[in-house]
Image (cartoon, rainbow, N blue to C red; front, side, top):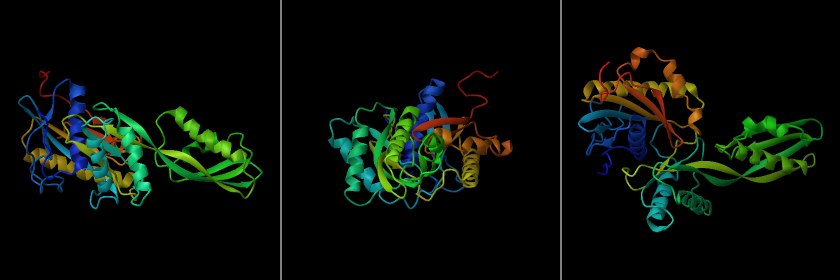
Length: 336
């Protein structure tokens, strides 16, 4: 039976809950479903002290109380996010190449969704193409065309100073290059996962650098890499655009720790006021890649007494679920 959209929960939290249920099914070899109904709008996503869980997952007659947190302010939504979601949802219904179902677009941190034409239509077409042929639970990268700027400062040296998404590749870019350069790659917010594809971006910049004279500036067409994913079949049909506000800094550990601690406390309060055999906290983070997440480090720096009542904690980012606290015991396993 398909799960219902939980009343009062945001699309981001709902998508995360369905991803969690599917991940738990694969992890524990059980079938988990989101219970019909759910918390009232005043409980869903409320501050610490809420009595009901955000979601309840069921496994046979067992209840898994689930708190789903988001490590940024969900309101107001980033400009253009809802309009893009509505347009892409229409494309899912209309285009033969897209299998009907539920999808998510993960906008990388600091990424900006355009609100003017023709940029809106260009992005829509690119993302719609990326949704074609996805199976449930599958994800892929969508190449978003962007333009970066390269300037040659002088003939001496062999160095490229880089700001923006390619900053981590400055050393490979500088190797053996004739002269000193500055690259503004701020339009790139997420690098591809495959090292070979990152190498292609670096090589393209190097090719343009060879042709520059001191004092010259050139535009280089490259790609940003956003993630699209097909959600489990239980999720509500349509497209969810998951986007943190552009001013959210994904490497701001202080902010991540503060918000994560708030969600831990909220989950503990819900566990104390709820009825469930297992208590789970899932947090959605503003990280370009799951390997960039700071939740694991935040948990290690936290007093275990603060989260000892929780059985499982996961972080969800970039279309991936990662376990950061594993259960000490499981209700469907015999006691040791």
